[in-house]
Image 1 (cartoon, rainbow, N blue to C red):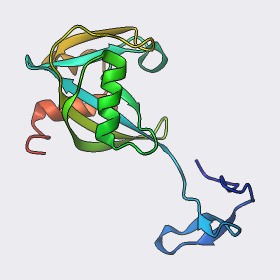
Image 2: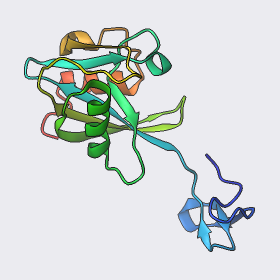
Image 3: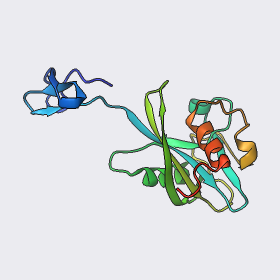
Length: 168
């Protein structure tokens, strides 16, 4: 999102040169730049002790296919905190030892995705009202379950299976 008006005072922003950043919207009244904004989200690969991934379906986001747990990072949260919260809210499971392994720019929606891997104990799901279905899927099957290439979910699963994130 490119700002035209100051979110603090409402004044029209002027373009100001900010060194290597080039021209940036700037509020003369507040004396501060307003860099382009974008949403940040987590894409979580939650794996149980049997090597199965949590996969879920939300018609609002994943249409007719299963997906990993994803969700927006709230102001003040770290990616690990958002991953723990999203897994708990959507599945009722507790994500242990979350670790950030990569980032991904999802251009169609302008979302900066932080890819997180963590452990969960296999248990029955307690789904939130926004989740229509959840399943335990063996990791090797998960990547071929209709996940389109070029998405953060496909990238995270295939990266994990290939060993790209070992040691991170």
